[in-house]
Image (cartoon, rainbow, N blue to C red):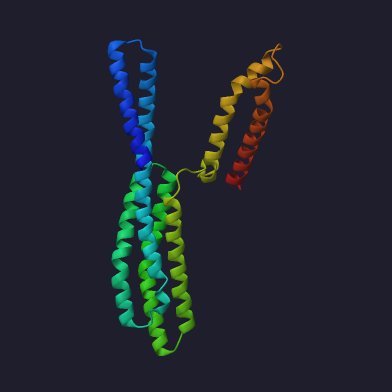
Length: 248
């Protein structure tokens, strides 16, 4: 944070100096240079400040998520109804805070894929919470009766693991800053549309090279020809494959 602040302050001084110099000489080269450096510094410094603030907010949400994980880790020692009441009383406010923070964060994200991942994991946590409470209650009842203890314990532990996995996924997604678009293609049609756009983008240069008898070997059009035709082959292969699946 301090380096970014200093950069904004220094850049502001550059702009002040540039304005003074331009008043006396509107065509001053050094003044224009300071003007450019000051503008660039303010933009980059402000961006760094926003990024630092955003990372700080993410760390706060992650701390809340880890608090929930710590409560989930002690479910195995909850073996009385009185302990269950205390457990629910302590878990509820932390879980509510995590849900609220993650929900607010999801609304701020610009990457649709990340938003959908957070929504999915958060919905899973919400659905599993009453299942967890019920599972602990069944385990306590089974322990007191001496019947079905193993099955009840396995069900409780499975729910705890599932909730923990979803919260770890929330933490992972919160820390993401970008994503691989190819990894998240929704369906075959999306893949083919992207391939078609890539082919159309290279078609002109490749055609120009093929039609020009005086074109140089190793030029841009020549370098694009082989990958261009490979993409065409892959594109039509995907169409055939897609048609085969839809007709079968």
